[in-house]
Image (cartoon, rainbow, N blue to C red):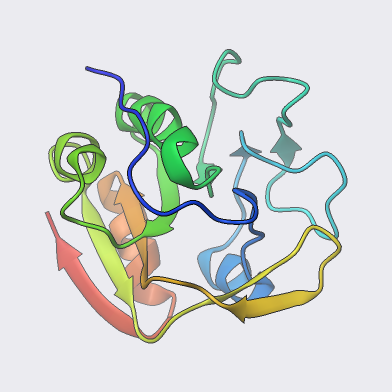
Length: 159
């Protein structure tokens, strides 16, 4: 699979924490390969931080992936496409090369969330509404069922 560079606007940071209600709705994850070093809440049983370089580490079990946004997301999405077990959270920018080449051909389903998420800053405080709509991307049929049963508002599309 090819690697992809950046697509999209420049933001003040590429690290935005997933709202806790989203994580709670999706259940326990074994690994988060993109975890902040100092996080206000856990996202999985095991965390790789920038110090560990989650791209270079082995991925195992059910993976939660909220990759750094902007161009840094695509190498992580490429690894998730190979891993095929977990859920990723991205902006729903379906027209981008990365989305076309790394999401549509490999994902099992997507939940396009209703409205825009309010992410959290590294200190846990609530940030303003995100600049784009978000999508939860399932890798593996079991993960599509998790999205279906999550009761998160939105539209599920099976691939």
